[in-house]
Length: 117
Length: 114
Image 1: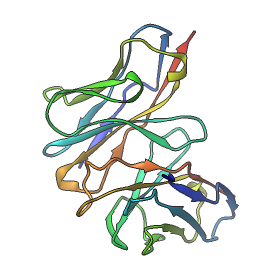
Image 2: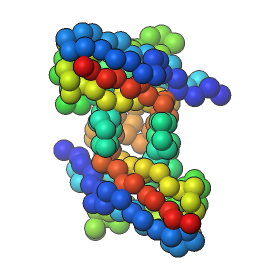
Image 3: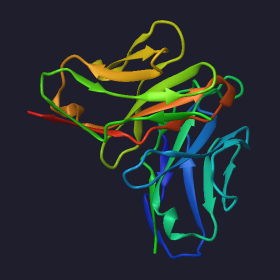
Image 4: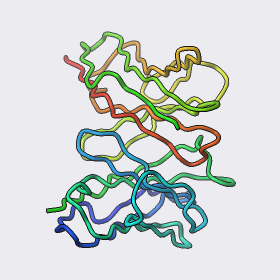
């Protein structure tokens, strides 16, 4: 089975620009979660998508938005980039028989490292 | 609100010795608890989880963790450390009531010396 793949692996943007990060779920998984991991810190929950709708959100401003597509892949969009947005962005997929549960195991991709100058 | 604390930034252990990585949590209601490991330039990998039942949970690579409800702890343990266990370890918690939100600790770097 294929794992979670993310693209691009690295990118550099300037303050004020917009960025789109992409994620392909592991085969058989229907739920996608996005996390931001700043250097030396643990992953911070951004949001989760299930059935193409947002299903839970962390403490991130509206300029962080996402999409989930019918094939369960997902995008994370960040507008008006700030220097503090520099981080590793992790996508994780999971399999839910019904509405996602906090008991579901997450399968992570290797991440997209964003640098904002 | 749920939270998780990993009080040690780094744990150093000699190969062959037992290791413990500490984790405490705060959550309303019954917790779901996890340990994940992160190797350099890679995403997090699942090690083990506690949902309900036996307080001692066994996971991948010989790791185990003990759920202690009275102390709100979920420490990760291994009887005999290997150099290849050196990595960054994250404890995570979720609550039944919060559905999808899984919260991670700040991580503990485990260093095993030969």
